[in-house]
Amino acid sequence: MELIKTSNELTQRLTFEKKNGKLIGFVPTMGALHEGHLSLVEQAGKECDTVVVSIFVNPTQFNDPKDLERYPRDLDTDMTLLADTSCELVFAPSVEEVYPQTDERVFEFGQLDEVMEGEHRPGHFNGVAQVVSRLFDMVKPDKAFFGQKDFQQLAIVRDMVRQLNFGTEVVACPIIREPDGLAMSSRNRLLTQKHRKSAPLIAKTLSESCNFVQSKSVADTKKFVTDAINADENLKLEYFEIVDGQTLQAVDSWSESNYIVGCIAVFAGDIRLIDNVVYKFA
Ligand code: PAF
Image (cartoon, rainbow, N blue to C red; front, top):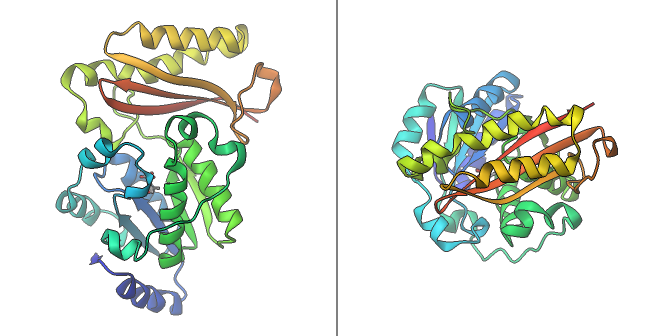
């Protein structure tokens, strides 16, 4: 496995791979790797010949400077974890390498980024689109792998790929959970003991709410989830939306779409956690 820090080196290395007909798989990350990331690398290894993992904490997607400052960074441990995977190239560029000039691009995602994360984290998805498009320009991957935990991010990345005509296939991979159900996230390690203890209630509640699809209304389901989360003094619900899995627009009844997902954001202390559950997929 090789560590590469500049886009020139990366281009050189990948030109060689592509000349040899290798299919390039790409897993973009912000480091602080966990089993969730490693499952993306594993999937990339199954589907592609050469796997590139980027590690870059992208400043343009943080709407909260405190969140950017405390975002965990640990390249050595990340490298150790990746050494046991099918990752061949680790791309860990500096901010100047990714953004030689300030990225002034403003993306239009219509209703896709007006809701949920887009509403509560203004500018976040514009930053995600900036960095993912910059990285795609450098890596030119055949396939890129993203976790389904960031459900809205997947929709945004797909739309960006369509808008900018990247020939990259976006592959969605399932959420990986801790044994107690908590969706894996780099931010989990920032939780205090008491917040970590409460956090599995998020997944437990989403899972229980699946039983509602047969017998209760969308409004009842929203109330059940909201009340269950807020009943725990260590958790505070930011939003829980039941949406169409394609358009991300809220639905009022289960019959409105064949693809319905519940998306949640919860503060556990000052750490923000997201998760989601697929209620209907036809
Ligand atoms: O999901 C993430 O970790 C980030 O948003 C991504 C896709 C690596 C872009 O910085």
